Each structure stands twice: as C-alpha cells, then as structure tokens.
Amino acid sequence: MKKLSILLLGVLLIGLTSCKKTYTVQSDPYTMDLTKLPSTFQQNVLFETYTATWCGYCPREPYELDPIVEAFPGRVFIAAMHQSDEMSNTQSESLASTFNVSGIPDAHCNRNGLNYFTTGSGAYLNTPTHMGVAIVSSVSGNTAKITVCAGFTQDYTQPLALTVYVTEDGLSYPQHNYYNTSSQYPELQGAGDIIDPYTHYHVFRRCATTAITGDAIPASSTMNGKIYSKSYSVDITGFNAKKMHVIAMINKQGGINAMNDGLFNVQSCNLGSSIGWK
Image (cartoon, rainbow, N blue to C red; front, side, top):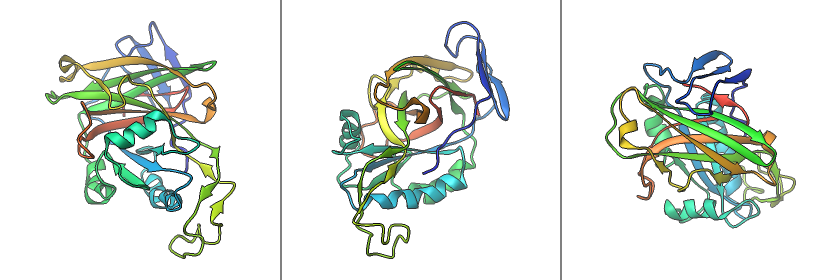
C-alpha cells in the first residue's frame, strides 16, 4: 500500500518539546502554532487490520483497502497487526485478544466493523469534529522521541485516552496466497501459492503508550480550548526509521469492549517529522 504521509518542509521548536510550549510546525501547505486551536478539526479514520504471512486469505486486504486510502489521501491510515509470524510481537497479539479477533484477515474501522466505513464513514469524514491530534517526532540513533497533542474545541465528559503506534513499511517476507487459481483478485491470480518476494506495509511495530488501549487523558484536559500533550521515547532498534510512521489517536478510555469502543480522531506522519492541527 502507498505510504500515508505529508512532506514536512521543516520544524522549528522553541523551548521544550511539549505542545503546551510555543513552537511552530511548518509544513506544506500550512504553518500552525500548536498552542492555537482551529475552530474545528478534520475527521480522519484508522483501519486496524489483523494479518499474517501464513494466512492465505490475508493478501486480499491491500486490494480492499488501497482504493479507500487513495480516495481519501492523508485522511485514512492503517496499522497492520501481525499474528504469530515474522512481524508479530506481544503487543500486536495482545491487541487481537483485547478486541476479540477470532480469525484473520480482519479489519476494524475506527474500532468498528470493516463495513463501518461504507455505512457510516462516508458522511463521517465530511463532518468536522471538535477534537484533533498533532504530532512532533524526531529520531536520534535507535530512539524515537514523539510528542502528541490532543486539542479540544468543546467539552467532552466521557473518559478519553491517547494511543500512539509506530508502524513500518517495506518489509519483505514470503506471503501465502489462496487466490493463486482464483479470479476474485486478479492481482493475486497466478502469483503463486506463496508469493516471494512480497512486500508488507503499515506493519505495527510498537505501541508507545503505557497501555495498548491508551493512556488516560485527564478529564480537566478534555474541555473546550484545552490542549493535552504527552511525550514518549520508543526503542526502534532493528527497524528502518526512514520507512516508519507515527499514528496517534484519541479513543475511549479502556478500549476493551470488543470492537465498539470507538476512536474519535487520528493523525499520522512520517517518523522524524511532524504534523500540526488540521
């Protein structure tokens, strides 16, 4: 799948790396002081997918999701949670358990079913929201520094949390393919029962937050005009920082009620770059 990013022209930081301090994120085509909130925010969407190299049905997911990503550039993001394969980890498997994933491939749109996008998110994406996310990130050696800001332009009383993922593109591992003799997905027909080489994108690498379901945002910070920020340090040893992304979301606190806990807004940028309020 295509990389989901906005090219940053530069980042100027004044003082400490916190959205409560004054600094400007400059990018094309906008420049924003993160201490100043817009009146409303752009609504974005996250697909959390569950996949594996041993799953012959899983290579169909890119061909189902790519058209959505291409139709809404910079507004639809993906985190692929690998299960029991070369790219899986304890967190990716814990997320599958937390959200009661019983079989793969599986995909949750804003922590609802896959068809939530077609039944709800078409109009959903066109509706401004009153909470938004901004990200400032940098890389030094094997450590990524990420500061995430959550901004609010109306009062929210439900318990909210901040969740931060890092993902990686361009990983090559053989992929089982059950569509080799099927015309259902022409791109996979004749590609072989095992596709090798096969490039994997949006691979979930780490959850930066203390809890995989997110760190609680204090209730006093989810009121109109408030900006909450939190900084994280992530070990990226063995990963290719140039092919990594940060995904940060505001979601319901707890997030353990199957697929219906809700994700309220999400933003993403290349690791090592930044993105302001949108």
